[in-house]
Image (cartoon, rainbow, N blue to C red; front, side, top):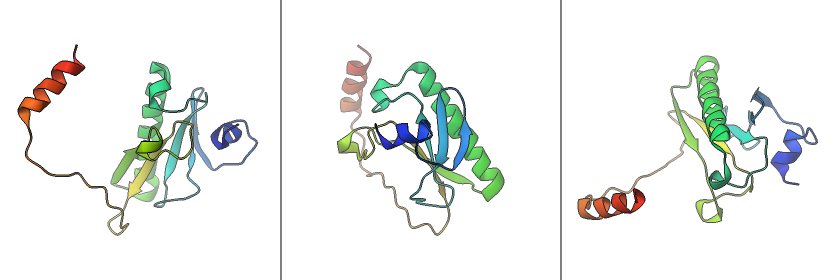
Length: 132
């Protein structure tokens, strides 16, 4: 049984900040920044590809709830919502989880996008493929 399933089953304690019938949200023990929270579906599902429509909606609803609670209680004005699905994406615990990471001016976290000129021809081909 995975660590998140043990938390959901009450076998391991957590610092719960939100719960409904489909998901649970608790403070990440690593606390990348103050208030770093994980949103986890109660059903064991490995990654984003296995989520149901209902679970997806519940995860996003919980993410928004947590973000607003962080804003209200910790004066957070910026957050990252982050999910790593699969080993190549950096997933360590093989139970889907969404990170809600509060951002502060001096947190030294860097998430970069690579800047380059867009290739509209390639984007058009990709879009066509995805819409087939």
